[in-house]
Image (cartoon, rainbow, N blue to C red; front, side, top):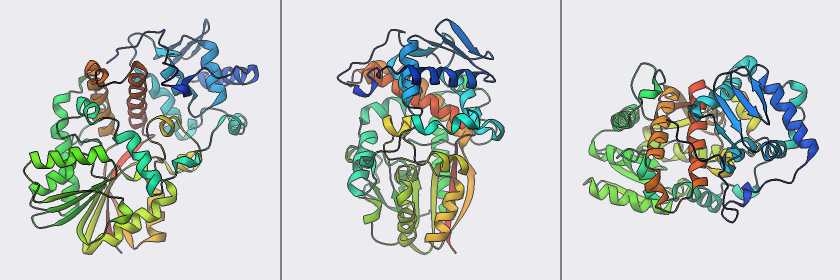
Length: 426
């Protein structure tokens, strides 16, 4: 679905100070243009910039403000391209889907032979335009609350406009085949059944049944907790997002399972007790590398003898995780402060070194996530008038369209994956 903003879009300066045009630097601007020419030589996409076209053809983008676009790229390699989109410096050509345009760039990272967009000599200079993650995004208890609140407490109403009725904010499971085969047919009507299938896969993997004691770490809006309670389980659901917790409690009451689910505004490090199943869905990405050992140790300490943990995690190739773990990316700056996507290998290493847990990958949901994200983005665009009425401006719309499309491209190309992992004690 393509529903572009006007080419002349300009962020409100007071609301978006980070999008102010950077100070012009001729050397950095030339460097950015040289980088574009290098990237475009074998890129199956087209970049229309200042009267010239770069690339091999295919999905096309048009740069409206060439000087500002190059200045942003030259100033910050990690965020400049995305910031230029937020600022309205470029758009996909009419008729080109934003995710389709971003796929060729993501493919360069997912392909072993073309993983780096620039040649090695140019990569050695990336430190000049690469930022490190700021200290204020530290994921200690206070920092984690702030980081999580900045995303999950944006607006319960906003999330409700594009998520399915279960309010499940993680990859759905469409069950077989290739979910990316025809994304143009992706329908909102298929989302709720696929989300319930994902929840059931997690509960089945953990052996959750009537009487099971379940801990849900990072419970979201309680879809997994409700589903577990409907099996007859006793559930403790914890989150550190205050507005999310309030709505989760209301949804649990509406589902008629308040007697079986307790929602607590609590950090995972502060949970006590023993549970037959510990579940955590796409929460590890917000933990931060420094705290991964603490996170898995907390899971192990909460498991009763014979207990099982299931973690659903977004992951990336180990080499890319190592290469990017100390950089400050667009996603960290605008969407998930303090976050870092792990690899399966680092999860295996951390659990082996710091815990007695044995991990096992059960399910790969990367392609399913691409379809989930396409449905979310279509719904977000369709329901934009209602979201705008909640107080969000056109720059916020561009930010979320880019985030959802950027993520979809990552999963479509295999640069990102989403895995369900089961953990038992060694």
